[in-house]
Amino acid sequence: MKMIVAVIKPSKLDAVLDAVTEAGASGLTVTEVRGYGRQKGKTEVYRGAEYEVKLLPKVKLEIAVSDDITDKVVEAIVAAANSNKIGDGKVFVLDLEQALRIRTGERDAAAITG
Image (cartoon, rainbow, N blue to C red; front, side, top):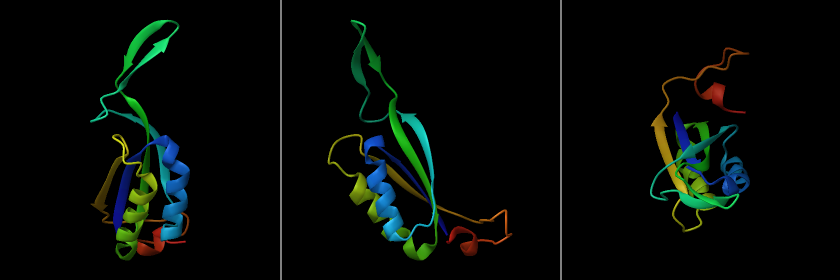
């Protein structure tokens, strides 16, 4: 099993959700986050005063998947989130040692599917 963690632009969330569902992911967690990287922030004007925003809004997705669909889900995220502009985000794939569905007691692959 793998844990896929993706940080993407908020505007790409709906497209990515559709893509990962079609790729076979049965569930995910979405968190609104802020981040700083190559995009370096931006300058905004509020009530006539300029100020710099260094931490930009992003969306973090956490998706537990079985090994056999990991590549398909990662490719779906990349294709749906890509705008060919700086700040599109990152995808991380981590080993997932154990999963447990609290309600039923199902473990590992049974706990993360349907």
